Length: 155
Ligand SMILES: *[C@@H]1O[C@H](CO)[C@@H](O)[C@H](O)[C@H]1NC(C)=O
Ligand SMILES: *[C@@H]1O[C@H](CO)[C@@H](O)[C@H](O)[C@H]1NC(C)=O
Ligand SMILES: *[C@@H]1O[C@H](CO)[C@@H](O)[C@H](O)[C@H]1NC(C)=O
Ligand SMILES: *[C@@H]1O[C@H](CO)[C@@H](O)[C@H](O)[C@H]1NC(C)=O
Image (cartoon, rainbow, N blue to C red):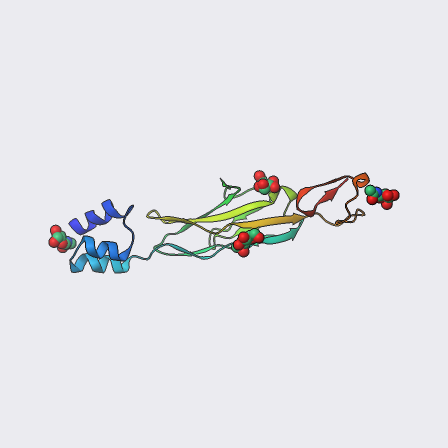
C-alpha cells in the first residue's frame, strides 16, 4: 500500500523511471513503474497553408496511460470541442475544419492529458490564403487596397 501512496505523492515531481527506482528499492514498486507509460505526443500538428473555405485537418496523436484526452489551443487560448466551422474529433483527437476562414489563421498546439500528466505539442502555424479574385494576390499596389496579412489581399 505504501508503494501506491508513494506514487501518489511523488508523481507530480518525480515522473522518471530512475527516480522511482531510487525512491523505492523494492520489487513491487519497480513493477508498478514499469507499467507506467510516460505521456508523449507522437504526431504533432504541421504548419500549413490552406485556401479560404477549404477543409483542413490538424492531426495530433499521443501515447501513454489511457484515457488520453486531446484538446487544442489557438494563439494560447483553448478552443472549444466544437465551433462554427470546426470540431475536435473525439476518437482521433484531430482538429477538423469544415471551412477554413481567414480568422482561423494563427498558432495551433494540441495538448494531451491523462489525469497524471499533460504535454503540449509543437506549435504549427495555419496560414490562410484568400480565394483568388480579380485582384492579383502578390501585386503590391496601394491603389488596389490594403494588403491583409497572410497573403490575403482585399480591396
Ligand atoms: C517498499 O519498500 C519500502 C521501504 O523498504 C516499504 O516501506 C514498502 O512497504 C515497500 N512497498 C511495498 C508495496 O511492499
Ligand atoms: C513551422 O514553421 C516554423 C517557422 O517557419 C518553424 O520554426 C517550425 O519548426 C515549423 N513547425 C513544424 C511543426 O513544422
Ligand atoms: C493569432 O496570432 C496571429 C499572429 O499574431 C494573428 O495574425 C492572428 O490573427 C491571431 N488569430 C486569432 C484567432 O487570434
Ligand atoms: C497601380 O495599378 C494601376 C492600375 O494597374 C497603375 O495605373 C498604377 O500605376 C499602379 N501604381 C503603382 C504604385 O504601382
